Image 1 (tube, rainbow, N blue to C red):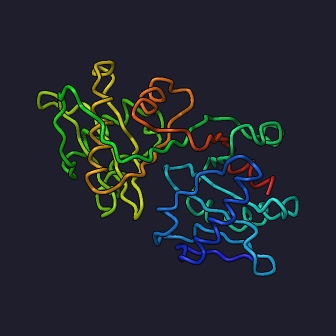
Image 2 (image 1 turned 135 degrees about the vertical axis):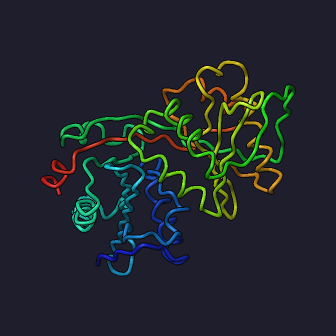
Length: 289
């Protein structure tokens, strides 16, 4: 039985966690599920549940992070695989993707899990990321304070967009104004702007959750990199989260970004998962599903 909705209940979230644990044990990892988005009431029915004999055998969620592309996460109970469950869930979500005028679909999968199979189906490898976590009560000592930090507002959207476009390739595919307006209106989300001698040079995002905090979009303008400012910015974010009682922190980083990996490791983060990202055109996906 298929059920689609725009908001995951506590009972459903618990079932998703149990399903993810089974997949992690079998596959060595799970794709990102963005739990903070699952529990929000989204504008459309982005979640698909597949039940068999009252057991959650499969789950799919779609995330519209980009203008004409979306990310899809799918998990299927290992004992129920090769029964077409993933295909049925994809078929149920396809009308929504066409309504949203999506051109490209991005799938995440545990690293190296389905490389040959995905290539054979016409998927194209895009990138890989590590999911890293820090569990510690210890703050980070900042020996030299160069940056001035403040919370960003709507008036800062132009400079926030400049920083994103200079530091993140994916930003060029995004409606930056709409994205930042949405983030700044979220009560559980905060963006901090970092200035050097009163000039904005970087930023960082923190999403507050009940038990932890997610750090993201940590960036220093290229002209100001390699001066220790990224380290200071990260340390400030860690200490700020700790001051709010958040000792469990998480972030994602591309596996090819060795500089960032070294930085996060030095600040106490450890790798939890590794995921590969594959893309396929919506027209090609329609022929497969």
